[in-house]
Image 1 (tube, each protein chain N blue to C red):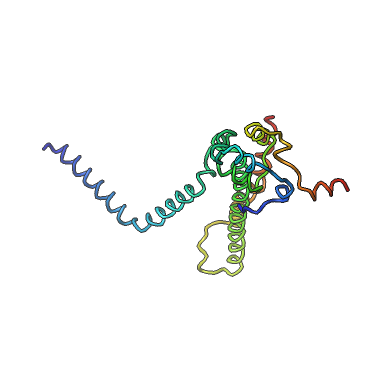
Image 2: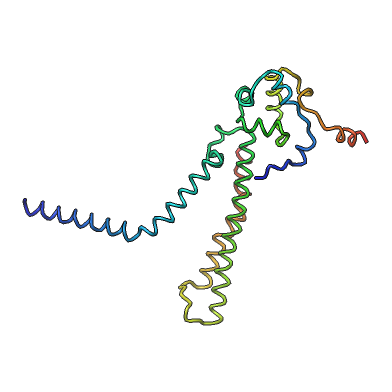
Length: 138
Length: 83
């Protein structure tokens, strides 16, 4: 075997070893992810994919149901994200006052505010913006 | 999504099931004829979903009756509207 081939083989072995270590070291992280996907697939089956199918595969009741579900899901995720962003804001303010050592964020108050608005404004504006876009096309 | 009928559905009386059984059809058969899922047919027959005008007309046509023979407002609603 030529020195070039030996070098290539060694590099390949090293890559395989790295991949093996990576997979095994992260196996506990993969399990919850796999479980999440399993739950997602089971949920899809249980609702006969109404939430994901294109319009042409659904009848009028299913479309109505799907649209109402998306509105509720949007409102829910909007609420959760807004609460999380506001919690971050309040946490930053409280840590600034306490000057605690455990304060690990390297974000300034202005940056945190930007993060809050980055989540909050789209949640507020998106439905009306999409509706305007739809209406403009008619 | 709950299955509890909305107020609008409470006001409408339908005779889809009577007409379907008269013809000896299954829900699936009627659903295929009007182009909806068989579950939707169940919701319609139980009065848990009010169809669009197009679907109501398709149902009437498939069952060979007029739309008035298939759907009507419940008695108390008629009285209320007259008052």
